[in-house]
Image (tube, rainbow, N blue to C red):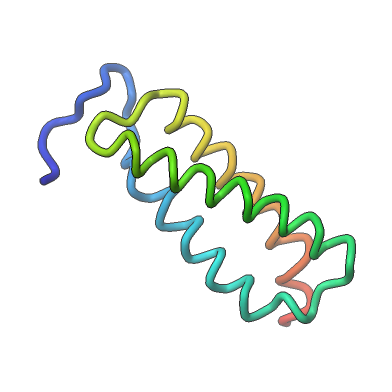
Length: 92
């Protein structure tokens, strides 16, 4: 299924942002009760974006657009920041 890259000038493994986001959603489900209300609301917003992106990726299938790939990368950064700021310090 994984053939040659279809997008020119786009040098990134497109599966990794999605794997990260999926893993982050799973981890957050386990940690949600530890967050304060503001953090939970922020997570709900991020999770909505993740679900929307997953939906879009499913629709685009083999021909993921650069805009969608960039959205995945941007969202990955936002989720990483959220986890770093709201989760890591309460788990350690």
